[in-house]
Amino acid sequence: MANADAVEVAVSPEAIAERLAASRYLADDSLATAIFLAIRLGKPLLLEGAPGVGKTEAAKAVAELLGRELVRLQCYEGIDAGHALYEWNYQRQLLAIRHAGEHEIDIYDDRFLIARPLLQVLRAPEQRVLLVDEIDRSDHEFEALLLEFLSDFQISIPERGTIRAATQPIVILTSNRTRELAEALRRRCVYHWIGYPDAAREAEIIMLRSGGVAEATARAVANAVQEIRARPLAKPPGIAEAVEWANAATILEKGGSPWPQAFRRAIGVLIKDEEDLSAIAPELGRIVEEALG
Image (cartoon, rainbow, N blue to C red):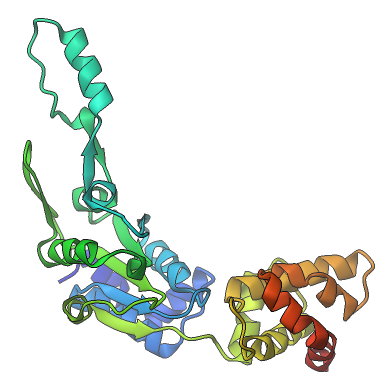
């Protein structure tokens, strides 16, 4: 089971949703339920979805509602154990040996150990939440290493012995599904797919996370973004880009650019690919005008 303080917070999916909203993250019932079950069952939470739907933000919000530090392990092609577990600071060890002279020195003391994200969480699981971000970008060997870690929550350091977590850590994994993850890893987790929100919910998110966007502007942005995402774009805009577009258009409008010109001028904060901009440009005016109603 997960630690007692986390269980106290997770009294129900509804309570989770309320606490997340207080952290400016709107979670629907299915996501709130997945988070609730992951905490209560003491299992890792695997969040999959397209880039920009709010997977990493969900992890940040969970850490905030638990009152813990978020430790993020960003995965990439070629990531290895040294970047995830620990490394020895060889330069400091060599300097210490030189300064010690004839005296004995323990070069495997804590001061020479560089704790990477997995070890950081093992040392203080009640104070930290582990985010393994974009696990699908790593290779199968690293995925196997992570699975072993999630099974035992311990690390063996040959020079120091085995370090075990005093309590089971809260772990969240994200994946953009650029490749299939191993079934063994999936079975280890509580799973949830995060899709793009509908227009009404996206307008709520924009209102919640923007710096002073009018409700009508938020609704117009949400409606326009829904249609833009339906196009065959190389890089569909995420929720964060929708919020940025609403903020940018509002700033331009306050500076003298009338609607819908403000939206068209601010399109560079929504669409960030040259080919996508070229594809959407001929219809952008119509999309914005229809969204404004």
